Amino acid sequence: MNYNSLDTSKTYLITGAAGFIGFYLSKKLLEKGCRVIGIDNINDYYDVNLKYSRLEKLKPFENFIFIKGDISDKSMIMDIFKEYKPDIAVNLAAQAGVRYSIENPDVYIGSNIIGFFNILEACRFNPVEHLVYASSSSVYGSNKKVPFEETDFVDNPVSLYAATKKSNELMAHTYSHLYKIPATGLRFFTVYGPMGRPDMAYFSFTDKYFKGEPIKIFNNGDFENDLYRDFTYIDDIVEGIERLLCNPPIESIDDTGQNTAPHRVYNIGNNSPEKLMKFIWTLEKALSRTLGREVVFEKIFEPLKAGDVPKTYASTDRLFEAVGFKPSTSIEEGLQRFANWYVKYYGVR
Image (cartoon, one colour):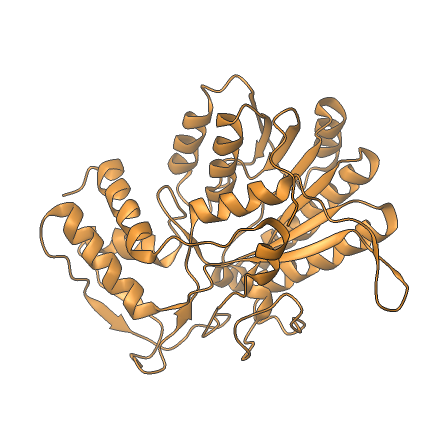
């Protein structure tokens, strides 16, 4: 297994740098001495104070340049690529959230489709060594076959968010084929951790507990057929991305003798799905340890919401084969770190 380690002499452009994954990736690259150009529009989909708190942690790095802007602004994106000439581009900017896409479809088209198109165009006219972009486990839809493999059929998305991510993979493949842009898509599986997204279940459950409100669990109270999720800790996600950055796919010849585009897609998931209720009980125990008293959430059980899928489970064989890595952080360890951070950050008892 041969793969290149991170090249600290390169310039890395990261969109969504004030976001959850974008912040942690930027921080890791900066700590290693890389030059990072960060872009983010600081939208108010969730608490902007958290986004500014992340950026505050990046400010001390001399090699960090932050630009407030929206990737749907094509002229701005083209200007940034021309000026800074990134060697590697990482597109993590996107309108996130499955349920939100049902209520606000317009913003998903603007950011996830038009915005990504602008990134592809910028890479076309300002060639990069590698374009890495965020896809999502949601592209698997209601796939019954588990674990999910990158070769599975993914043409039945059950939310607009998932449809935009599948579109990103198709768009990237086309640009790789036409313009030889080495591109890698990453299907993330339920990423969690300190400084995470407040719209994610573990974070909103914790918020509601400290507000004295019940949490809503969308599994009909069916513990036998509970929802399964492949929860993936943020450090594992960043480690996987970091290893892939300097290992772009190359054009090759397939079994039929045809040239294949330099485009690959990888799952980054924990390869160890947990029942949603076990995840909730583990979060209760983690908060109990942090606070030194028993924490039990008040629970209300409701039907599965439109756009939600009953199970996510990643095969990580392709990722391991490519860069020798598979996520390994347990939910016990990951949720304890989150609980410790949350209590300190918000000053709750």
